[in-house]
Image 1 (cartoon, rainbow, N blue to C red):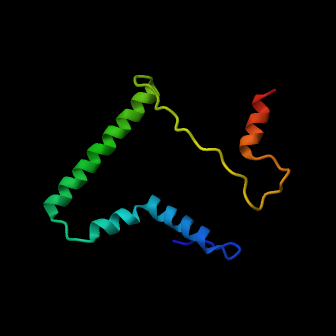
Image 2: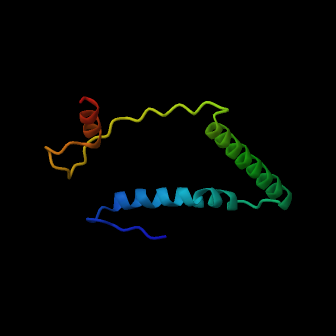
Image 3: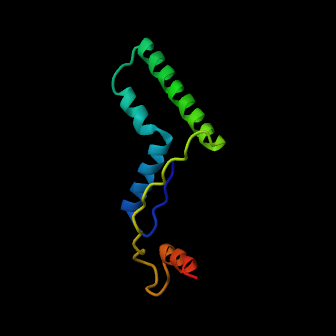
Length: 102
């Protein structure tokens, strides 16, 4: 896994690396490998994971078919402008507001 460090910003590169590792499931696998897992426990866990995946896929399909209501969108906090952005440039949220006010 590779992460680029831009402008000697190691903190941001570390955040990106952690996010990539989270998506890949490395943290979950490390936690599982911390102690021995009996083959029967492993089989039960994998079966439960498969059932969970199947239920999630069926729920998503039912939402697409209109049988279930769509989930409520999560409230997202407003984004602050980036430190390096020009002061007069509109932010993404500001640009969306400008188009809706017309």
